[in-house]
Length: 247
Image 1 (tube, rainbow, N blue to C red):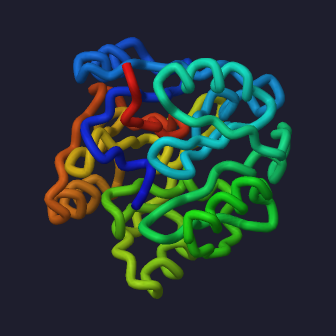
Image 2: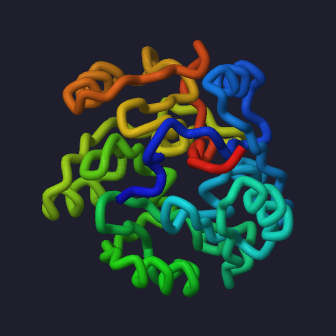
């Protein structure tokens, strides 16, 4: 169970408020209700609207949200049948004060620098029977593109090494070559989402990424499809969090 992968076709998506109209329109054509994030003024500008910074899906119908913007998301998500839990950690602008909810997930495992993970999030992950893989990378979800329950793509060498040792199939790609507001580059996990168990959503084309051939081959070998939401280069929008909600 990986809650970033909807059981059925997603009908709700949480996306960075700055996402282009093209990306949003293409999601809406899939009959997806769009919930745009609101800016968190307590965070750095580059990630101030990133869903995977402000929240984390514990399971398919429960999301934990940072106190900074809890009221907004509690109102937006409960109307779609999603349970919303208020986290304990108030996010701040400087690393590692901004990583408490940015936890990577694959089947039966959570990946993070658990020294800085929100305590309430850890409690609920343990309650779900999730094991912890501790790494130095705090932006763990940003760094992990989830392909399926046991497969992913990352540019983080240590993450790839440790997950591979545990039996997961992880493609290591070259870092960079991904746009991020006000930064030199972003992370590959932040460019992605999952429409369902068979289709990967990408914010743009991978043609100009130096690992484009490897990425495409890896995803196709897993019998997954790629849906490009724009013809622009990849942009890190902090993961498109997709859900099966009530619309």
